[in-house]
Amino acid sequence: MKNLLIYVHPNHKSLCAGLYESALEGLKKSSQEVQVIDLYAEQFDPVLVYNEDNRRRDMHKDPTLAEYREKILWADRLIFIYPIFWGRPPAMLLGFIDRIFASNFAYRDMGGMFPEQLLKGKAAVCISTMKGPAGYLQLWLGNAHQNLMKKAVFSFVGIQKAKFFEFGNVESNKGKQKSYMEKITHYFSAN
Image 1: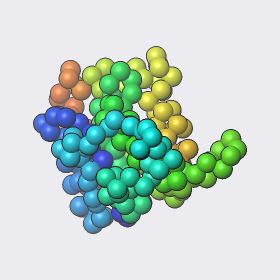
Image 2: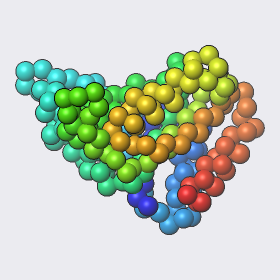
Image 3: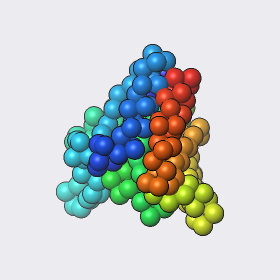
Image 4: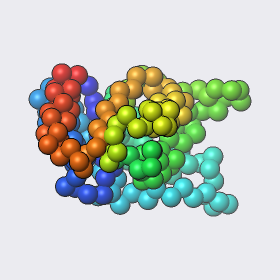
């Protein structure tokens, strides 16, 4: 399986960084192919700009984003690793989605209620951390994070298979961090 690991965290000593290393370790154990996009290290610009010179309908042809589009097309599975900020993924990841999952690349407007889904057949895994309890998102926000990623993004572009790992209380449960990383290593070495 070809995996694209999209790492989105500004601190390379965080639990997210440990989960990133764990995912790579698991993928290596199972001899799967992997490519990496580290949005902060690559200084990805998440700001969506379109105007008279840079039209929204042409975003799928932006040459500065061609490498990202090629990696997404190459991959069978997209693996996102990021923290949860205010009940949602960080702006860096949302900006990446805004700019890369463009019309005529990730989907095609067909004039009706639903688009043609151009990323069909791909799977996604989201691994996220949060300061608060993991159950908070489900209890208070109606699982807004998973709904955003699964329904508003993945389903819209044709990614029907999505798995979520949400690790909560990461600052107060430092003793559990090793078990979180082992869980991720095991998942990717078996899947």
